[in-house]
Amino acid sequence: MNMLTEAAVEKALDQKMNTVPYKMIGQDVSVYYGEKRALFDVKLNIRENTVTALIGPSGCGKSTFLRSLNRMNDTIDGCRVTGKITLDGDDIYDPDIDVVELRARVGMVFQKPNPFPKTIYENVAYGPRIHGLAKSKADMDQIVELSLQRAGLWNEVKDRVHEAGTGLSGGQQQRLCIARAVAVSPEVILMDEPCSALDPIATAKVEELIHELRENYTIVIVTHSMQQAARVSQRTAMFHLGNLVEENDTDKMFTNPDDPRTQDYIMGRFG
Amino acid sequence: MASTHIFSAYDDDLKFLSRRISEMGGLAEQMVSDAVRALVNGDTALAQKVISDDVILDHAEREIGDKAIVTIARRQPMAADLREIMGSIRIAADLERVGDLGKNTAKRVIAVQSAGVPRKLARGLEHLSELALVQLKEVLDVYTSRAADKAKSIRERDEEIDAMYTSLFREMLTYMMEDPRNITSCTHLLFCAKNIERIGDHATNIAETIYYMATGAQPEGERPKDDTANTVGAVTE
Image (tube, rainbow over all chains, first blue to last red; front, side, top):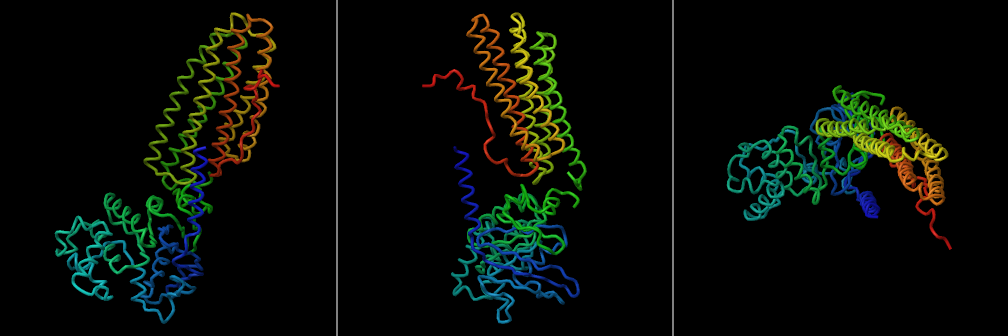
């Protein structure tokens, strides 16, 4: 009886999951680097307040897709994106869109922690300042404190926010970068292998943070660690040779995936 | 499994588990068949062998459990591999129980042999154990082949054993009513019949586990049951 009710609750949760609205919609997204096509008509939607993990072998296009979500590919010469990507219904490749503002709404955290060679405070305050988000010094202090708190770093650095950000440990630096991304109040945070340069303890802290951030933000994370995808995400998308192979609930993806290519990849087998 | 792991030591771990399961299955089968033969022939030496063989089965189950834990910790299995390992643990537990039931049957040989087993009941028990052993043998074959459809059909055949058990139950009640001196041996035989019926259930459990291992889905619907012995003799208005 108990088991029946639990199963019912789980099913209800699944159904609830399926009704979560889409924050970003990707329609037939293709990306070309010069002549080379890196992504083939990918149709992938990103759910609101959900952690979506993108997995797949190197060169499968997962980072390319991630970078197309805030037009980071624009910075690469000869890169061309076709198809349509929307954020809350607005086409982000519309020529009228302000790319700087887009990247404030869709923030990004990179593989290697890359704090500016400035103080901890300045690292976090930089974004809000250029976007004019703080009206006064007190305002800015509050934004910095709140962002560092959200990134789970405040307690560790509150007595030395005016020291260099580069003096922090790797894990702390990465959380500082997350605080920096959070400071401009983004709606979506993109993370490109945010833990691959961190030790297991720092990784666990960042994962815990991702889990908490999900309440307020929509998160898309590229990871090479299947275990990490399984730990932190609710949805998982598998890429292979520039194609989206499968997108599914993470629970299903790692216990009984639909596509044999997903199965082979997550089980560490030859295809 | 069509393809192999990139890291080949992982394959060795999984092969170890399936080899040990097959070995356990073979021994469990042998124990059940020996126990029933010992019972029917009053062969106490054979019964003693079954009792001592159970230790091997217990040991194998623990070994499979330990290996499974280590494999999960070291390889962090996913999808079919994870189901395979969890399935191994469950199947090993079922086979260990099959061995226990064989052993319990063997232990009753001494109590039953002085009075002897009536020919008709002996035939009934043999037939019941044949059915259970066929189930067990087939389910072990399916374990090797991973044919999900066959696992499903084995699950649906447990009904026959249940029906056979119910009719044996009735027969023994009749014997006991006819002559109270039969009560001691018939009670033991009743437990033996129940043991064999339970072995069929464990074979069914294993079939369900294999189905899950192969497909990732639980077999649908209730398993068919025809064990009505629990209501035999009930006063009906």
